[in-house]
Length: 119
Image (spheres, helix red, strand yellow):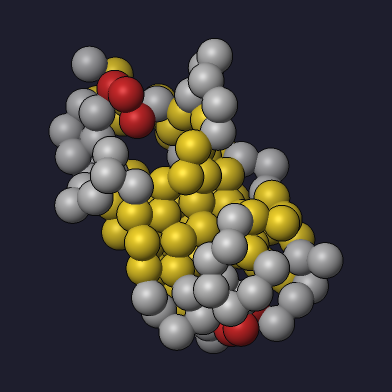
């Protein structure tokens, strides 16, 4: 089992930036694929971005070119740099760990951090 704690959410104006962090513990972080998933009010959770153990990344089309996922294995932390934010990016953002070294969907979740983008 892995424990995940997100931080860095907040309120930002459209066009602004935020950086989310996720600290992980309880599993060999460096061999675990990590990702971010978000849930907007009244909507289902949707995939945002993922990074494999070796640094391979994948993004949803809605954030590609604006968001960057990265990891620091020395700090057991994964990041999500969000630029050019839009009101439709407003959601609770969840850090997630996958069951293996490449992203296969989440099997552990953090509690989430709220991101609100005002127009």
